[in-house]
Image (cartoon, rainbow, N blue to C red; front, side, top):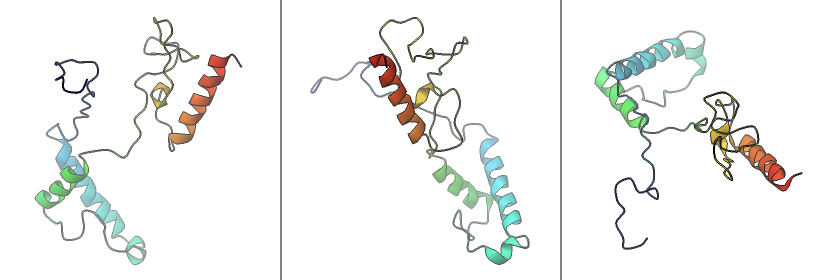
Length: 142
């Protein structure tokens, strides 16, 4: 592939993942309002007596524009662990069956966090390892 330009739609290209953060006109004002509300809560007694300084956006950010700039900067990515793009199940929205085989295709399984139907309440590392271990056992017939 080196030295060759890839054509538009080349399956070897990295996918474009655009979650469209802050794309709706109401998104940014709602985040700014949320930060203002959190400030009210954190400055109420007894929290005000035990909390330290504000880490973000910081006490110096007072105007909607300053808070909005902080939100825009922080909302450019995610620290979350998206899952569910290849949901496991038997319903019409499921991509893989309970043995991780892709519905309608022979010889293809999906073995990663994308098979989780919904986001779990913790880190996805351990469940993903469990999925891989279970998949390996199923493929080996154990």
